[in-house]
Length: 122
Image (cartoon, rainbow, N blue to C red; front, side, top):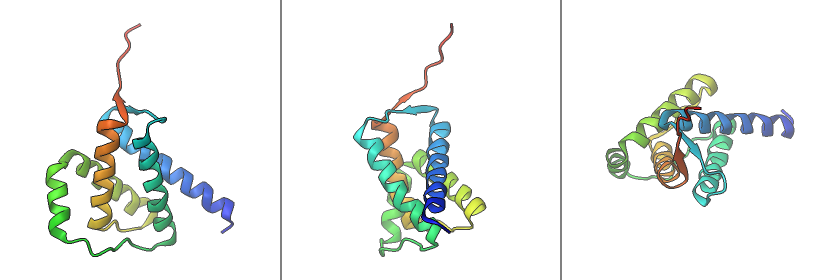
């Protein structure tokens, strides 16, 4: 496909992943925050890997991933939801290594780069 087509696909994918996180945690992101910027940067690489079909492998040991998943279990559950979405829509299997990084980024952006949605009773 054309580069524009790829860019569109990538943008849509990133927006959908961000939406999953936003809805899962009932938050609004502070889009001016460095944490949000880093999260989006990570998602760009993630989306590119999904679209080119190359899985992320850096030989991270499984033990380390397990520790991260246990420590940040809510972020991990959200990362797993993203994994399911990507598998269903893009037929791409998200590895545990990929999920580990996703979990860390989700934890950071949610805890430091967002605010809980307030219900305004007008």
